[in-house]
Length: 371
Image 1 (cartoon, rainbow, N blue to C red):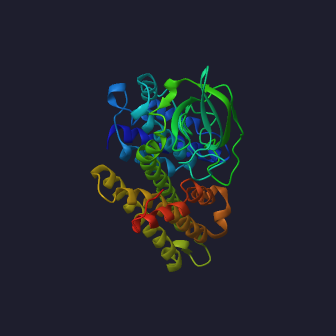
Image 2: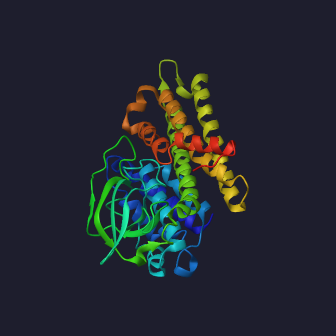
Image 3: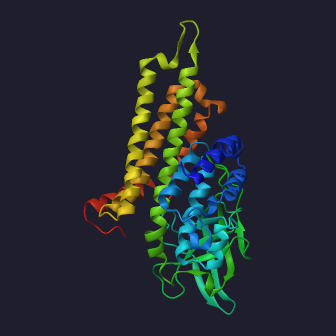
């Protein structure tokens, strides 16, 4: 076991799990983020030459999966952080990259907009050149860690032209930004995911990440693989956490009058077995997706599209079974299953949604262009 993974295990068990209930009530997972910062894990995928650990997608996905077993909100905050950092590593300044590696920069994505909804690759927010620099105007529908991030990896229409997009690094405290919090939702309540409106936000030309009009390529080539694989990791971690809680409940809950436990019932064991099979199938596809990316296989994009859809669907099915196994007790917060049940629902509606992914997968199978 590598040193960073040992540190991660300590953070997950001693910090993330301890604060999971408070985070579910809406508190930002500050303690977990601070623990990861102190362990150098905010700079996990930052290059060694800027002071980071120099790890890749596989390591980042492992962090997300482990955190999600304890707290989905904590996992999603880091999913967005690593997605943003992947862009910064390719297109950010050395100063920003060193700040990330030192743990001084919590990143996040600002792609989804009210005008284009789950079609995150098609921003309608504008970037206009003015005397002060570049003016950004947009209504972002969701930005995770909106009130806690250092800066947003932000999409807009290009400065020149009306197609494609451009990516910017926008400080979270920039004048003209307003957040519409707090975040209240069915699940993932602690990830501080709120609408953000930009009205006349001024950034410099140097804030651009990549070339003007290159945003779509950055989204598809950098962000999509990271986000899809890590979102799948979150769903897989939720399944693992739920299975642990369900097995503990089934083994520890007894029918005193007949001297047996829930786990003594074949029906209960059948449900748990189905949970295990579904989780393992999703994990296998997820790991194969990472291998496909590492090896540059021909089926890489298909696997990238499949892994989030498969893991998200499997997680909702596994948690439906978990609720059935635990019965009335599943509605109690102390059993924890209802929290996992709520949190798993986010993956199917988080862009790209499961329905959009199925459309893309169908197009890929039929040899059609995705966009």
